[in-house]
Length: 542
Image (tube, rainbow, N blue to C red):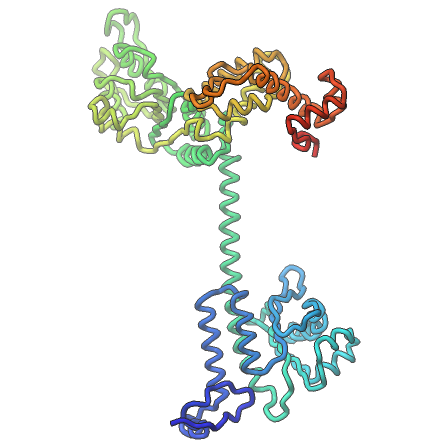
């Protein structure tokens, strides 16, 4: 059945199609306004399901209130927790040419009343109140207010805490009154307050997690960084974290990485940060001695055990009792020594060469290797059971080529180290030399970098390190670069530019001083800076 009978409720937007509304009221006992309110609240709940972001919810909500209640303007105002100031979160119905802050200033006294009372506030005649309050007449004129406009302010509160205010302007209707409007607005305000609390709690949790992560990263980068280890790259921060995690345990550690990456520094850092740091720290390179001597070095021997054994000698495991033993290049030991080492790791006992007396040992084992142990196991040259005994807590030292951001830190460290050793002052490194360091692939890793810097410091003789002070291997060109052989003029210009850049760095872009040092006039200096497109701002003091 269809009817053209309009709804009797003011502002009703329900469809006119359906059963007669008079009949609906009599049969269900539900008024048209109640149906509209339920529809509006359902729409609000759907908005919250889609998003907890208030910026996506508030404006559509205010638009629906415009349609439902005929409001002229609506705002959501949030209270700043720190200062107590009001912040306009969203507003609808503002006329052009009027700043939202001007409207906020107009209604702020009523917002404060709402916060103080923690209850809804009604201003029946907004114009009359504004005139008594000596509000700006231009603001009232731009708003187009008259004496029939009322202002309703409802607090957004949870328990007794007010976090904001929902305010609306609408034409006053003496027949209906404010009770129904306040009931609906209070329910909506409660929903918004709950959503704001959930959003705020989530934001605080996220912020707390971010701060905790920042503190952890900072702690890893600084507090956990061992004394002699240099580097701030992500790979090195992971190494520092693993050192900190395993140091105070007695777990066996296997340090993996290419030759020259600093595996011994990791072993030393583990020892210096453990409970056994006041006990012996014994280092042994398994690749430094032949197989016939390694067993005697590790486990010791009795007098007369073999030719040349003139006296009893303690082995490294016996000397390290109660402390830590570092077995470098563990992948180079023979299969027979692997069996005896496995027994020490499993049973914590061994016999000296030439003795049948079993000795107990309490020693923490840290091993290192640059070998591919997995491949050696496949080939049968390294025992699987020993591998799993050693590989309890692996730490991987990254090669220098994957931690480019640490190259300059390491270079500065080695420059300071070797200039101090020679009794001089630390020197700078030129831009051209830096470019070579960053472009090189460093097959020898940190050890190779240290050797290069030591050589460069010697050649520089207290002056800045130039590109030609670095080893020829760093200056070798790739096959692609070799196709374009530079002319003598190109080489001269490259050297000239490098010298100009170095002097500008030393003088903080003081053109006059730089020109004097190079024996040029200021005009010629300016022409060369322009010719080589040198950015003076890079070297100027901040």
